[in-house]
Image (cartoon, rainbow, N blue to C red; front, top):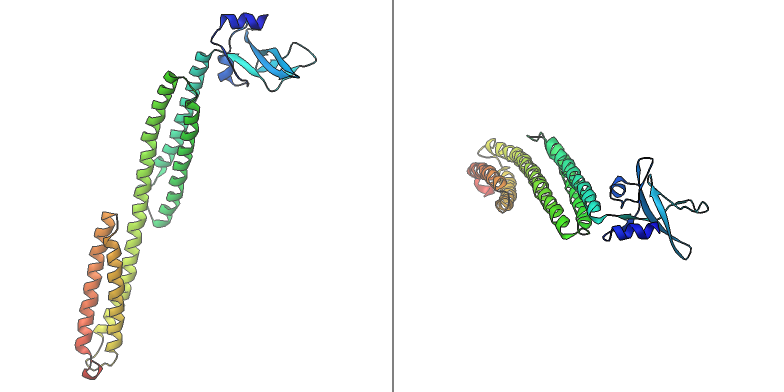
Length: 273
């Protein structure tokens, strides 16, 4: 039969799940042509057996007019040609995943304008990294189905894509996070400075016989305790830039508080001491 004749010419041919995609059509084991188009062989489970049919123009059609076009079928392909086509397709998918992730990096503002924008970019970069990792995982599953030689070539492209894209995404995420940390610390220091300046001003406005000196001292003492505690957490921060900036700012605040406390204590009446 025609089917036996083709198999004898193509001992390495294999059956794969059929579709109308060009990847499968281009790898068909040739069974002739019709209207200048390649004719192939397909098969489908039919009743209690297998029904051989012909694959033409993206359809598997039985020569039995009672059966007609088959929806679920397999086609006979040349494995080497099929791998070449699939490999090219997967490389295209890898490039597409890389391009999508790189697009996020290209649009990343530099310098970052404000914390709100940075927070939005944390979400964007996290989603880009998640999409990229997901695409790479799916492609890796496909790669594992190929022969050793093809798998090695695709795995190399896969690894290069991960190294060239995932690492920049991670670094960009770290830069944005650092910006948020630093700007957050700047705001914290600014808020503390307003509190400290307010209390220090109260201390400087005291007169020598002002009985409210003790209240100001208590207020400054509370601020000193809270600022000192915050300073300790900054000292342990992993971000060196954050720690340097924070410690410098906190030291200045502590000095202001101590100076204000000394001034208030000097003005405190003897009976209040």
